[in-house]
Image (cartoon, rainbow, N blue to C red):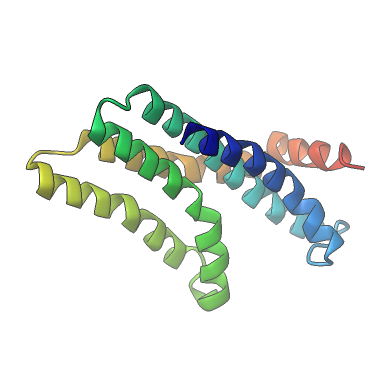
Length: 164
């Protein structure tokens, strides 16, 4: 299991770092357009944040494998972290007029349903599931905030210039 998780992290880094250059090569992104490039930095930071959350939660799952509820919750939250960018892309394709509302609702329904499930099953407040919801809720605005800063955009441009 841990070997698979490490492979997901290693290949995930490569996929994330190649996503913008691949979009440019495919003609989906104009590198001369400042607006397109600024917008493209958002998915990069969301993907990087997802990888960080996945790595942290899988580390927790590995360390606490003898605590079944924590182990299971950490794996689920880590898996959910990868869904944010996919949900945004899918929702914009299917519901383009709703903006970020539909993906936000779908994304947060997953950990909220986990909280409800655990609360009903355990008959007490599920602190691990709630902590996972908080982690996911912080991950998204953090990625948007970082990508909107001059530092974040310069990081994005530096990353792209290093690929030439």
